[in-house]
Image 1 (cartoon, one colour):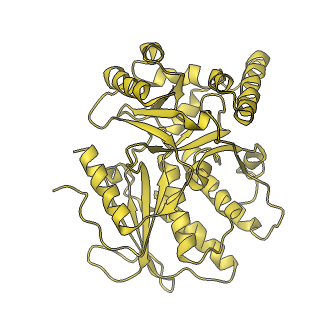
Image 2 (cartoon, rainbow, N blue to C red):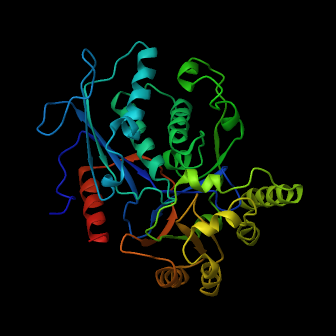
Image 3 (cartoon, one colour):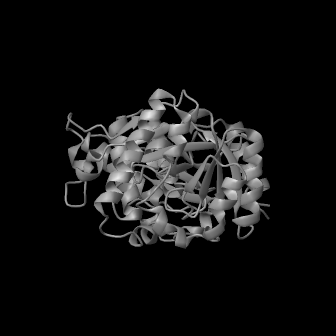
Length: 376
């Protein structure tokens, strides 16, 4: 029997979309939320319901604490650790609970349900989607006690528990939508050597963490073709493979590309924007972790790609097209050259400008059914 079944009625279900970090030119600084043009929802969902005793579910809360139950569903739920102490949904709950207690409030007794439809270690912001969906669901369920900036701080901290350091290039676009530019201060201020953001919630001088870049331009109309080969690249491994030091020439080149890319978005210079999507600090080293990397780029450019590169830390690869027909050609190329097994997939996407949002029961049902059909 399929693990995707008719969903129960939920009080609140939050969807957080897939993301592509870096965009080649913006290592650890750029992140983009994406949605398939087919209408399929590519991301994770977390549902929140009032707690009630249910067969098969255990109250995870300590004695005297508000009741908490958790259940996991979805195609990739078996890829998560069975140790709930390592579960990002539970970690997010604990952080949110602590924040409310500092405000003199308490979490409500509840049940959290994770629909894990995103492959783990895919380069599509899988962990970020779970974190964002959980915190947005909890915040909405409790009448928005946390500000947007506080939410982002928590999201970055939780993402850091997976990758080793707090970063926002996946959580910010998944939460806010669109193309987000991170501020370096967001990394430096809350390093592991600094106090936890939980201890600074009363600080009214929180730094701005991200800036939404303009997409009402030709770049915002491009098609983003995402290909997940069905293999796994751990973010930690993808970071370890990078050198500790770079030459002055490399830093100058990457900085020039990044500056010109941002400028091109504001001036609506599509040729300059796509021409700047080049990476000299990460992709040359990370390509060795990808299947068929020696021939992939050439095949994509021959099929009409405007630009291409690694999504996040990989193994998902992206390619840009100016029209639907070219995007379809890129899909064919990816299937021929890059997909490795039945777990792999290719989606033609456009920018998701909405970010995390509540789903109706009909949308949740369609989300689950589409995932089942896609991987049957």
